[in-house]
Image (cartoon, rainbow, N blue to C red; front, side, top):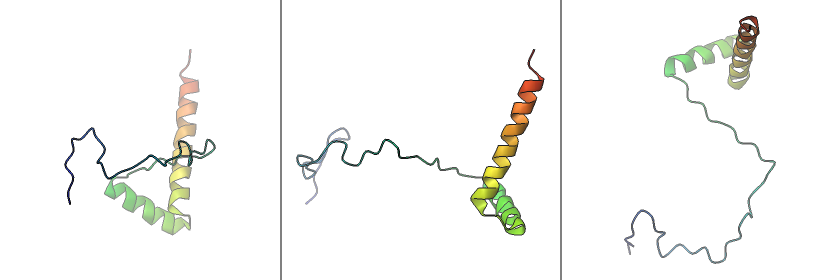
Length: 80
C-alpha cells in the first residue's frame, strides 16, 4: 500500500513516538569531509602514491599541508 504525502510531511507509517532525542549524539565525534577529485587529479595522485609507497590519503594530506605552508609563507611575506 502506497501512502501519498506532500514533501513537507512525514508519511503516516513512520512513527517516532518511542524515539529518544540525542540518543546517538556524540559531542566529541569528528566529521570527515568527503572530497571529490577530478578524475585526472585522482589518477595522478593514485599513481604518485603507488610510486612513493604512501597511502592515497597520506599523499593528499602531505600535498595539502605543503600548499598550506606555501600560502602562509606568501601571506607573511606580503604583509605590510
